[in-house]
Length: 501
Image (cartoon, rainbow, N blue to C red; front, side, top):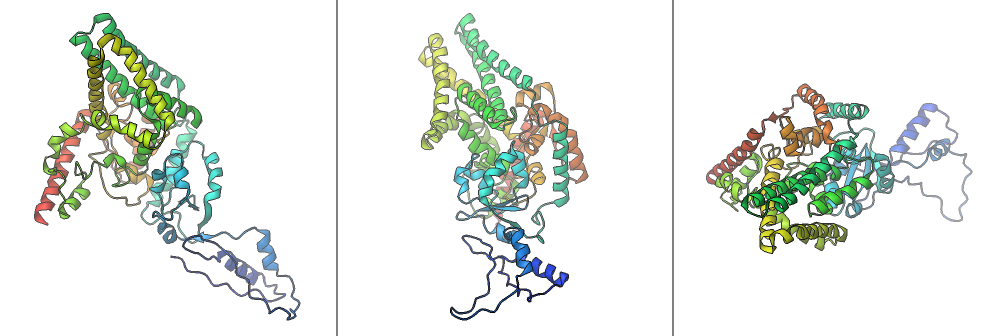
């Protein structure tokens, strides 16, 4: 909590000492007062004489005139003052040393209220740069939220963050932008979309040409699963604004791919996925690990906490076994399939709902004439089952085996590297995972087009080596196996703490 500075006495009339003038001016510029609700900076004028009492004539104050000419006195805050505004009633954050009050803005934030709230009380400079493709335009809208800046004596980073690493990463990002690696190759994404549409057409042709017996039916289901998985990776590109230079076109294509090709709402994806990127593997901030603790005990630290607290929602020491039952097979068909409709109706996302309906109408009209209603429903849920397994193994291989903890307010690079790992590059791995085998580069540069990940990877590796940060990359099957290994290990840690505390 900052203390209110006492106002120094004004300069004597006619004082002309330059050193004294500079001292008084500096003191005036540092004066600020603070109140819990509405921080304000003001200079309190000395009380004047009572009414009717003659005032002595005074010469103009040259310091006051100089201060007025310079404009309003800025309001200064400390990191402690900012950190205290991280609750539900009041939220502040810092971007480029500027302090913003986002308490009311969170409800209007285009990326969702939670993602910006996750940085309340913290410096958000690097995530702000990482997530926005038109920073100048966004900053214009932020002017109304500006309430001051950090005091000159305050460092640019909180004590929990690595200043040298942060400075060098920002230099790396500037280098990446100069190299043109943030610009997309539109031909790449056009061909990628065409290959999805071709697979979709091939699935229908399989039944139309070869009939609806078991083998054509199964081949059709596999092709449609590939369509759904690959469309999932493509909508991910548009959702991250990594294809077009303007948000408008990215959002439009995002609605088409996730809504019309997959039957899911874009708003739901934005709400969930940007939180994951803002604070990956941070308990209560990353929705991707909301499985803890009701289904799984995740991470060494959180698992031990559960054991010490004597909490047992599930037999966690067996979670590496029941993962195969309630993890990959069940996520999409048994949870996401109904939850996405609940989400759009509850939040009145009617545009998303309209896009979703076009998917189900098209799918129904395409396959019911060939299969009949019962076989059509069977096909649909087989596709969702296969897609769910594909999706879960790919998305969790980079995160579940990594460090999972509460938010420790670390710097951007450390936050992302401790929560992510890579899978080796190959033509199959790139296609199978939608280039999410380069999870480290994707998390550091979320708006970077995926075809440039391998180009920036050596630069990221050099940065990590210089600062002693582990840069993990592993074979695909090893990454899958590490999911099970980490679940088994954290389950055992929970059991040990549960029995011996």
